[in-house]
Image (cartoon, rainbow, N blue to C red; front, top):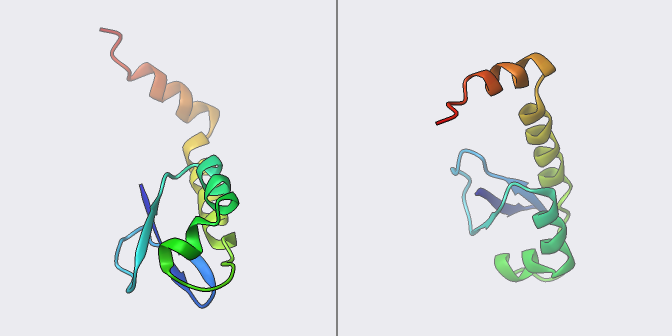
Length: 85
């Protein structure tokens, strides 16, 4: 789970879980972010009026996706390390 907080009208990721203020939790999945935006969940969770910009969280999730994908060699090595039993 990814902790997010509202800072200056934007929803920002709090990967280290150290930022001050009311936090909300989000699955680190772009589909969950889209669903939360569609439901307008962030203003309710943070108890603020008006919309919040979720671009910082979207960028963070894209970076996580790129890191998880890794290079083809990394994926092959990861497959070799899996125990089939």
